[in-house]
Amino acid sequence: MGKLIRYATAVIIFVIVGLMRMSDIESDNTLRRIAREVHGVKTEPPTPLVLSADKQRKVAEMMRHAWNNYKLYAWGKDELKPMSKRAHLTSISRGGDLGTTIVNSMDTLYLMGMNNEFQEGRDWIANHFHINDIDRELSVFETTVHFVGGFLSCYALTGDTVFRDKAVEVADALLPAFDTPTGIPYPLINPSNKALRPYYWAGGNSILSEVGALHMEFTYLSEITGNNIYREKVARIRDLLHNVQKPDGLYPNFINPRNGLWGQRGMFALASTTLQNSLSDRYMDVAKNLTQTCHEAYDQADTKLSPETFRFSGEVEARALKYSEKMYLMRPDTFESYFILWRLTKDQKYRDWGWEAVQALEKYCRVEGGYTGLQNVYQSKPLGDDVQQSWFLAQTLKYLYLLFSDDSLLPLDEWVFNTEAHPFPIKDKNPLYRAAIKPAIAIHEDNSL
Image 1 (tube, rainbow, N blue to C red):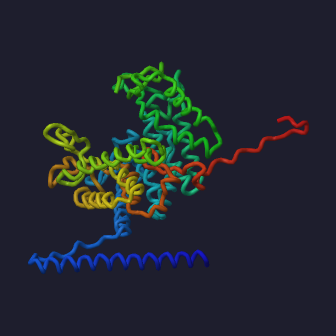
Image 2: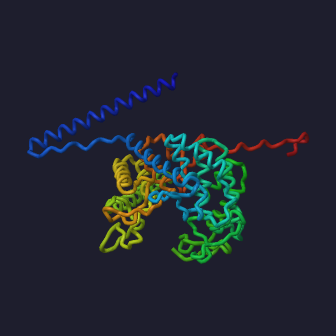
Image 3: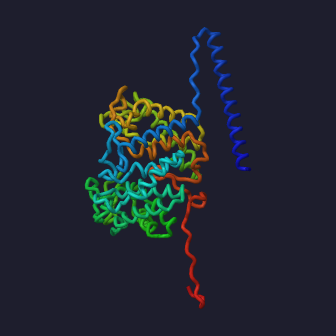
């Protein structure tokens, strides 16, 4: 009863505050209308007010449109071709049948309260996801952040052991990649025959950003299973990177998994709030300026969607020059920045920019069969690329939804996001951390262990 009263009170307060805000807005519109009439200016109707809750519901509707069409035309495959209405096969798993969109979408569905869709995905994962049946090369990095990360996030949110066990299944399939002289994993592995190889284009090296991004998933997996093997694998990477000599004090892009030698040589807002040192203000300024720059790339395009790559030169700023750079692949990174900076600063412009992006996505990317990327963001009537990327559901729509949510939904002092926007609970701060209970140590009658 107490909870019901608190809920009813919260609803009443919300309605009152909403009415007060609407009253203020209506009064402001009235004053503007009178001023225009006094000065002989033609009165324009006020822009309709769209509340944050309505924007959030709109993003949820977009998620349902993307999910339903994936289910209709590409269920169980990795991704959807929304224009031709069939499965997209040349994606993350290189064969198209690991259900990447399902696994990546699960925590987004859960956060949006789409319980029926979540249960559909859960059942498919429990009955049809078997990574050891895959007889082709998979990226250790991509498989970790998409699948291990996706399963761990769902386990944290729900406590359903199916997700924990599937995370173990995937991680165990990847462990042979770490069996190198240095502990640096090979980037590619065949889960069926355990064959390993490096990226040939990288000169036999592994990518530093990839091997460095495995730590969160493998450490958390050890925490919830009580099996330290996963933590040990990534801790060895950290130890090597800490102790190896860095040219000019900087980390290059590539490292050789056989000998630990460097290959070819080459998150500010959160740092400003977590490090709390003399550089905190500087980090926040950099974060704001970087996000402003990314927004400029969106704003300068005819579609109000950013190109894949943009440049700065004497002639252009934040614009793509080459045709191959002008595509829009539905990436989430800028929206992630909007979300984080909104949470940390409460500057309304970040929500405004996010809503502009939602409207642009609806106008240019939505098709009958889902959402498509674009070939050229500088055209007023761009052609679609006919791919609904799995990260559109996993990240892009999730960050836009969170942008318009209350701070109580995944508070940043209790949750941290992995590379694929899968939320992980923070140890000692989040009751959903779900660490494994350590077994009691047996004591014999002679007091020996």
